[in-house]
Amino acid sequence: MPRAIRPFPARVPPRVTDSTEPSATPDFLNNDRPPVPHITVPRGVQPFHLENRPVRGRLVRLGPLADALLTRHENAEAVTALLGQALALTAGLSTALKFQGSFSLQAKGDGPVGMLLADCTEDGALRGYARADGARLPEDAAPRADALLGKGYLAFTVDQGAEMERYQGIVAIKGASLAEMTGHYFATSEQLASRVWLAAAPTPAGWRAAALILERVAGQGGVGPEISQAEQEDAWETALALAATITERELLDDALTPDRLLHRLFHAEGLALARPRPLSYGCRCSRARLAGVLAGFGAEDLDHMAEDGSITMTCEFCNVGFRFERAEMRDGG
Image: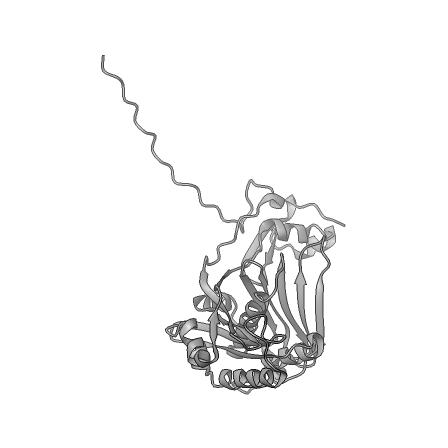
C-alpha cells in the first residue's frame, strides 16, 4: 500500500518587529537592537612595536565605520570632524588596556561644543556623540578644538560595572587640538611619554577617521637586549620624527592598508606588527535601558514629557527615537 506523503508546511518568514515602537513584550525585557547599521572593521586597530627600541603604538583606521557613526547627527563639519577624532582616539587608547566594560573619553567645556563623548568596549564596540550649540559656532571654516570646547575638563574613564571600582583621570582642557589635549593629559596624569596624530574629514567614500598613537615604554619594552639610556632617547626621538611625516591623506586613505602605511614609516626601525583588533558599530541602547531611565521620573514629569499620549526618548548616540505609551507606564515618583 503506498505511503502517504505529507507536504512540508509553507515556510513563514519571521516577523520583523520595530524595537522603537510599543509591542507585546514588556519594555523592561525588550533588549532588541534598534535599526542601526551592522558594521565591523576587522582591522580597525593595528598594534605594533619597534624591536629593540622603547616604542610601541597603534594605528587606528575606522574606514566606513566612521561614516556610519558620524552621519547619525546633522552637525556642522567642524563638530563632526572633532567627534571623528575623538572616536579614533578612544578606539586606540582602549585597546592598550586590559579591562571588561567600557573605556570612554569625555570633554566638557563652556564652548559651543558643550559635551564630547566617545566610548569603546573591550570587544571594540564604538559609539559617540557631540552636543553642540550651532548658533555659537565660530565663523572660521576650520576652528581649532580649543575654540569649540572652550574652558573645561578632559576625562578618561574605565568603567567595569557596578561591582568594580571605576578608574577616572581628569585634567583641565589645555592645548589647541584634541591631540595636544591628550598629550597634556598623559604628561600630567600618567607621566607617560606619548604622541598622538589624529585626522577626520569627509572623503569621496564618506567620512573617515584615523589615529596614530606612539608610546614610550620602559627600556626596550621587554624585546631584545638592554640598550643604554642615550640609545633609548635617540630611538624615541627617531620614532617621533618618522611619525611626524605622516599626512592626513595617508591616515584617511582606504586604499593604503595599515601594514603598508606603517611600513612606510618604520620599516628601517624594526617594525613588528601584532594581531589587529576589530571595531564595530557599538550603540547599546534598547527599550529596556530607556524604560529604566523613565522609571525614575515621577508622574508629573512623565505627563510633561508626553505628547498625544506618548513619550519619545531619543538615544543621543545613534539618534534613534523610542516611543512609550504614557498610559502603560508606572511612574517612579
